[in-house]
Length: 69
Image (cartoon, rainbow, N blue to C red; front, side, top):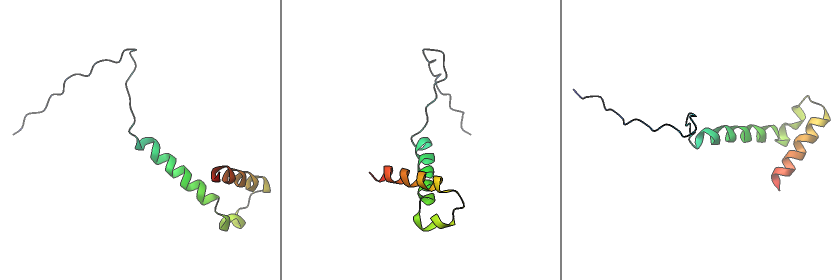
């Protein structure tokens, strides 16, 4: 039977705030999902199926051109 391991106490942060750090993937995964969904929306083959006005299509086209630079 093993004994529970006791961890040394962590020092308090200097300003009294909680010290929280996110791993790199906590920001990378939502960013990757957003970019993937945005690219799916901007796919020209699916543009005819959209039921929105011409303003939305122009906005997406402008965003796509900015990203292509």
